[in-house]
Image: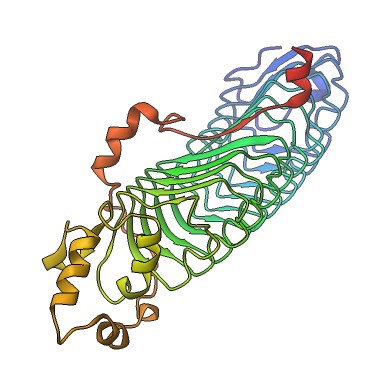
Amino acid sequence: ILCQEAGLDSLPTKYIPKDARQIQMMSNSISLIPTDAFKHFRHLKKLLLDNNQITVVAPNAFRGLKHMEELSLQNNPLTVLASYSFSGLQHIQFLNLGYNRIQSIEANAFADSRDIEHISLDANPLVVIKTKAFSDIRDVGVIYMPLRVDTIQADAFHGLENVTELAFDQMKSDAVGQFAFRGLNKVDRIIISNSVVRVFDSGAFTGLKDANTILLEGNIIQTIKAATFAGTRNVRSVKLVNNRITNLVPGSLDGLSPEVRQLRGNFIPCDCRLAWIQAVLKISHATNTTFCSEPSEMHNATVAHALEVQRAREQLSFNQVHTSCRPEDFEPKKGYSEQQKVNTAATAHAGRRLIASSSILLILLIATRTLAL
């Protein structure tokens, strides 16, 4: 059924045969998808609603569509994925929500939706991923998300039980909150690369007890709070590589075993904060591979050199420096400038990037499918 550019301002479902396999209603003025809008279309496999004026998708709007292969609402002014708005979708190959104006994904937006292979949320101005936003889509294959994610709330990825890799590339985020990754029970790797993050909250990585790798590489990070990595003792490898970190507060690296952490190539402030971080760097053998971002006279010098200079200044011992300057005085500033760019040196690692720069990729290993193969 093709109703493209037909001037429709509502769904003409009562005029469409109930045995329709494909319905295409692109480029109309449809603004609302009501509850159970397509419940009588049991054989529907493809539904395209691109380029409309859809602002509301009611709870359970697509309930009953158990044989869908493709559902697309691309390029609509949809701002919120409300709770249960996309519930009950099963065995769908591609759910396309790209190029909308989605700012928030509410809890249980995809409740009772299973076996979805791909979800696209690309090119949306996403502000917040709410707690349990992806609950119930445990067998999803790939989720493409926008580069900008202002806040990742606690348990945002709860329900994605079979995720083995979660990668963020070129993301801009105001905060990665406490317990942001809790519930990713089978995740093997968490990767945040070439991104701008204002603050990693205390306990941001708590709950990743059995992950193999946490990698933060090539990022601009304003603040890593105390106990950000608490509860990650079983993680086999934690790598903070080639980042520019404005503020390291005491305890920010607590929870990391010396034998698993790598700190090479980072730029950190060589001021009072060096008084407590130097011991961590020495244990990790990183004083010669970590560099100073400030003060200006130490810019680009190795931390090892900064330590030598400080010791040479008899009137400025580390104890004196430490008492004259408190790390808590360096509070994270709100609203990172859009002009800030990721360190261009990170581009040297482009060949090793694991995902396209236009998306955030969640890649899942679905055990049942693997066994079936």
